Image (cartoon, rainbow, N blue to C red; front, side, top):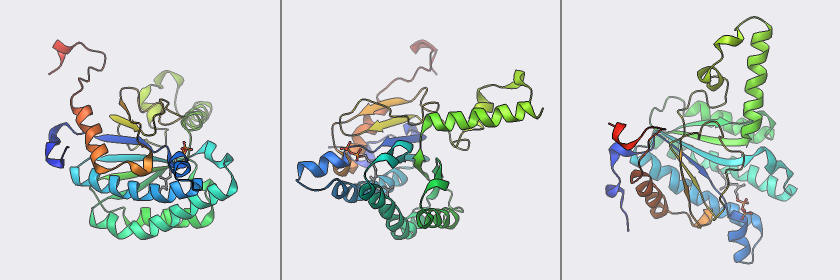
Length: 246
Ligand code: FPP
């Protein structure tokens, strides 16, 4: 069993991203509707956010709703939107107590008005916090993000604001939703699926990947600590060889 004290503070991922998967299967295993899984997934979100902030992780990004998730049955989409509103409302106080600022990436303007209003309000009311940044990926798709960035850059070239020669990785980065976030250091996916599912494709170029069979509603502090221990035992070479590090 790991404790928070077992995690080396000097070797935390600066940016932890999580694909929270398995809510539907978790519910099905219990003979319940898929939405029951999402409702129980909220508690895992709460616990993960709190532990990450307590540890001193700078950025936590959660894949809460993808551009493809709009295709799910209406009941499920409506429930997810309602859960978003109620969670934001309920957790504002906790976010402030833990010095967490809320951020969102994706086509957030496509969210229902109520959800968008709540989201904007919590972002505003936590904007002074300078501890962890919690980013919710909402109506997010990485290919959509990259396409949007390419269009914006192309338009600047067309209008002679920039010349094509100066386009480099940092310019592309500056046109992504994540322009204010560092690259992802550790990406966790729950539920035993080994896929990235259109999540932060550009930003995970050098991320360490961690997969666990645990369904999201069961993802506990213990599972997070296990993932962090695994991360801390890895050698990140960024294309170099061991001897060149340090
Ligand atoms: C994936 O499980 C999960 C989602 C699409 C939504 C995640 C949402 C929550 C955890 C609750 C609300 C979040 C916030 C931030 C308040 P799945 O439905 O794809 O599961 P399955 O693969 O077993 O079908």
